[in-house]
Length: 266
Image (tube, rainbow, N blue to C red; front, top):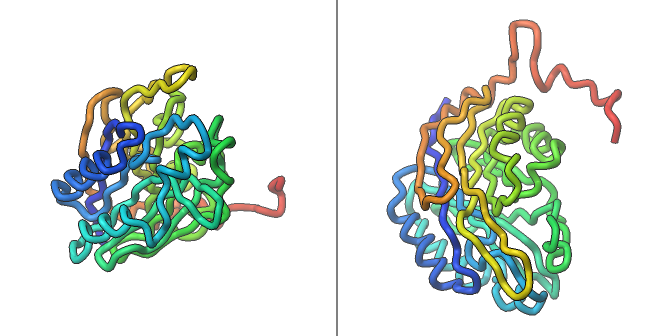
């Protein structure tokens, strides 16, 4: 069974400065020496929008947009896959999305299923469903930020065969870093949560303070690495995919085979 070096980049995107944020992301990509790198939610635009027009201006078309092309060029030909959160435009609709890009270019898009707080003013709920991609060394699924709050999201990815949950975030609530330990335990998967740091305050809105604490968690709930609440960090850990594919809890119980969906509420 293969091993993969997975990591995240925790930083503070500057609101509205897409080119500046993209340059910061590219520097991290060039410096990274692993196989899978996850960036925060809305890493190109920043988070605290004031209008839907502002979102539309800062969003990109996927996969034809210019930032996607730059990311493709940065990754192309390397033994590397990246997951980047960004605002997406599509036929008049706006989505809080994340793209997966690899050695051959753009692979796919996940649109955030559970939009949070004022995101409901700007973004349509995602319509992709929960997707899993085989990237050779591992099978990866994507959640975006508030999706973590819904156990069905992580379970859906586990049932579809995900070894690693790639989890871009702009987390402001304090619960997620510890809750991801439970998500990994109850699904026996790895999770890479890439959160942002810093503070945003725009217009008359209350300031948002992002909690950092990006992390990589193993299927047994062990925190392989966790960042601080305020520092920019590029982190990497070795991940043994065999741990995620063994769903046995003991000689008599298998996490997924022991499920009894007939009795579960829907």
